[in-house]
Image 1: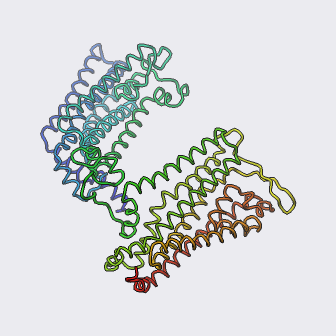
Image 2: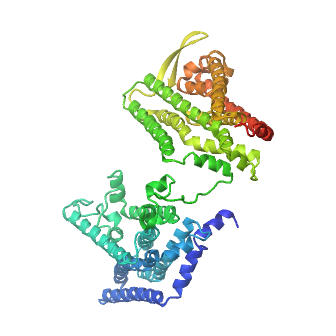
Image 3: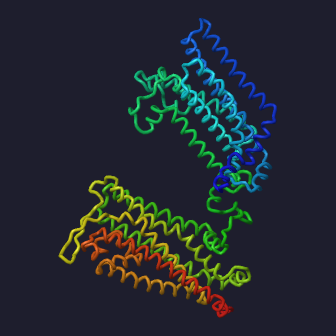
Length: 623
């Protein structure tokens, strides 16, 4: 059996929680009485309505009218019974929260959070859907009399099923949140009934004021699509409860006033999915009660930061990666609140500044040249900060552990030098990725803005640039930012940061102290970056097709070429191929640069692994 299919079956039909609920519920006499009473009421109403409508005689027209009337009464009765019985069947899910031992047992099983939530939902929802299926033969009987479209039967079932799904999802969300106990069962039941009555009353009030759809304002209102009885009413009585004409409304008004039945069905499904998703997220966190600090749990704001309760002697356990060194390197950097605030403040402030800059440019606050210069300066500055942080972290990663004796303990474990160095590299990059996402996100947002033609910005996003070419001065129309920046920039910047990290690790391994490692790494990375940057800059401006390729080797020249392609790739842009050829060459150069940086990182890693033991022995006891 395919793995994906087996996973789906475990979520639903083969879910052990769902199977247990269905098997146990099927043996209960109370459930049998409820199903029997439900069918009995439907049968009595069906027979009684048919007898009343056929007292004047039997004819095809009389039977058709009797069938239509009977279907209408049964449809309303069915959805009423479902709204009444659904909270009854779902009450067990809410009451289950009152016994914390149930959750303690569930959370010790291999079941995932989504399996726990869906198992409870589908297992209890099964009995409600079984009631709907049991009444289907009665609806089919009305087809023999005529006057009842098959589509109306299916849509009435869909409305009732969506109502049951929403009620069930709310009950499961209350259960998982653990904010309510057994006393909440009655409150939940009253809330469902009160909601239906309140929305029906508001609908009647709006129609009495003439604020509904239709010529006289007596049609559907905003409350029709959020009440199952009203949605069914517009389905069964389209002439007396009119919808707005197709195409007469726009936006949300079109959804609520033109398609109330579809809006009710889709709205309940989306709401149920959101509730199930939220429940799955909080299921293994102790629910909302624990997240808000109730029942001795950790407050939500400390849980978001990965901290334990105030004054606690230990933190909640965390899932360790396959490489413990990588996990430790990425997680240990967030050990204090100050470090977390510093990191995420940089990410938040940089993201908001980039977004605000694009909005300011869109509204005409700055010109295109000013926008280009501001983006260039911003991205360069953010990249410089990220690079310096990467160098400082990498240069102290090994030397700090040597100074405090941690490295000696690690060498007694089964961790090999290859896993150790790879873990350091992977962990540091994982920590730096959110910071690197700031300049990359700014370039990507600007590129997508240009790709959408500036959302019809006044003045456009193109600018003519005069460049000196072989035949004299050439004017080239260039965009404010090359749209492919969203793809090209990450190809170079991520491997470049990996190269900086690996260089820092190399000097950290060879140096006796952290200060010497940091100074050496800054010097090496600074010299290499300056040489590659100057060569790439001059090659892009002065050389032809090869120059555009080499311009991508340096992050600085690459970012400049993405914002000023006519100037940064002047030799290629003014040739016969034009700007399109220059852009293609820059993309090829980005792929080549990614391969080069990756190969260098791999080679440095292999060399450090080969010399790891000898280097550690030489520096043993000299810290």
